[in-house]
Amino acid sequence: MSTTHVNPQSAVSAPRDIGAARLAKVYAQAIVEASDRQQCREDVIEELTQLVTEVLPRVDNLIAVLESPRVSVADKASIVNSTLAGKVSTTTLNVLLVLAQHDRLSILPEIVAAVRREVDRRDGRHQAVLTTASPIEPSTQADLLRSIEQSLGMPLAATFAVNPDLLGGLVVRVEDTVYDHSVATSLVSLAERLKQRSIHEIQHRRDRLGTA
Image 1 (cartoon, one colour):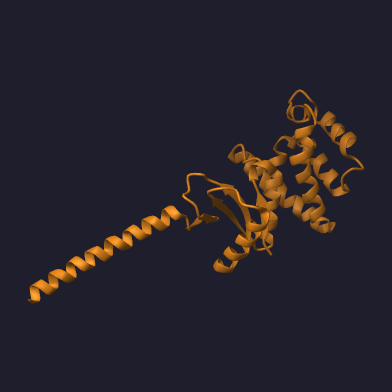
Image 2 (cartoon, one colour; image 1 turned 90 degrees about the vertical axis):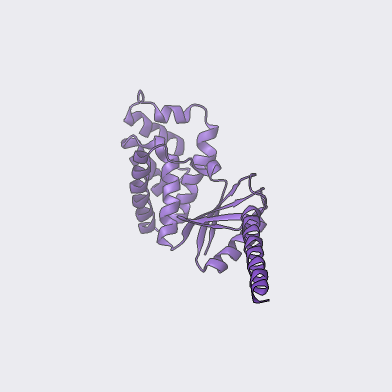
């Protein structure tokens, strides 16, 4: 089963540094295991994602407070409790309290991204970035993703990106492998084929003249 994550910057930010990325991975593994034990993985992922994409950006100064070294760990935990108790699942609340106790709430976006990667890894989905020259509708994205999965023979967790410098077409990156189907690449390939054909024709004429 494929998953599609559109506009990655709107959901989670890129890791700020290698240390944050490593910490996020450790927490992500623990979060997935805890939510699986409670059989609430999807709920936890959805709630954490909503916190990052909808709640934190809309609450004035909340991110600054949670990241501030001047605010004690106990106060941060108290803020989490008073703000979210009863509004999220017990597992999600416990996750946030643990992060508050370890003063890691500032890397929550990185942790949410790492949770998604961990879930995809456990479910056998490969991380992919599909880049087009212009934005495409979600329904078209879904059709395109299914087609690519069928062509590659593997399930993908896809993020769509836009690069106006492409002359049309599509560039697919699956982890460390790039499959380039852009018009620009096609033009280069066509030019190379025409060049080889010309060389072959010239050589053929030379052979005929030599025989004559």
